[in-house]
Length: 294
Image (tube, rainbow, N blue to C red; front, side, top):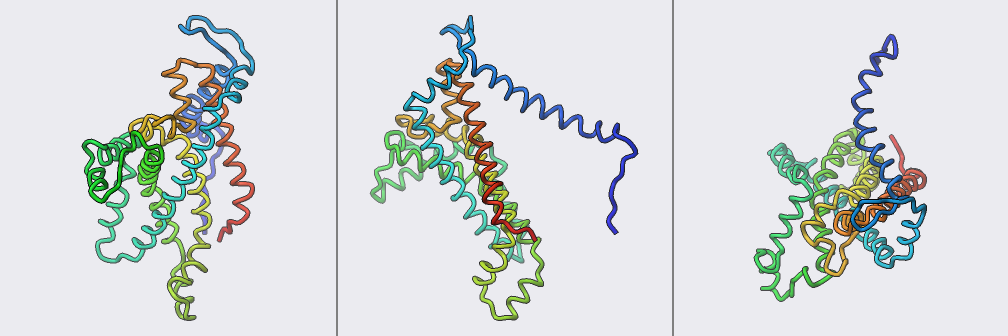
């Protein structure tokens, strides 16, 4: 028999919800409102005076080829990070689910990268692939690869994609492993008795049952690539070379902090927020139709 918690009034639930509501209002809705208001203003070069500019900041962004180019860079970067983080996470989860001896150690080691902050992950990959002192950069040169991501745009993009995806693999691994362990063993055993090969069992039984988990992780990885990869890019390439790795969230910071264009930076943050909300809505509207919940 299922037991449910029943409150006699609204006071206790309100008290329990109040801390989370306060955090959400102070750290999410209030900054979003401030950014929306700031996007309608324009200040002087010294930040002493501001005046109402309406949609001028948004109009300037539409006419800026560098900003429009960031859309393509962000789309390619986000898609690549999502694919490279989801696929190894699923593979490692399937392998870990089969481990009997030393399973706890194996899972703990795979989860360790998730405890590393994106900025630290970026520094680690930067030192490994630095053209002057990087160990892996020296190994690439020995095999004939002219490696210098500071001057080569495709190499720089590849490096930040690998660094950002590596950071997220552990997160995906954790959820895929939980999804695998939630699948009833009787389904796998029944298919094995029917003569299904391990590969066929995975694609016809296991993978469809992981559809809710996969859909959730798809949304999370897209949001991660849009926002949480700032530290990786800032510490590895700083948007270079030649703005080749300047995704939208990095351009928001650069134009606001370095360029001191607070109005334009706020307008970019509003557009970025709208893009992420739109992408999430599209995913829930169309992709979730193909997700079957057991």
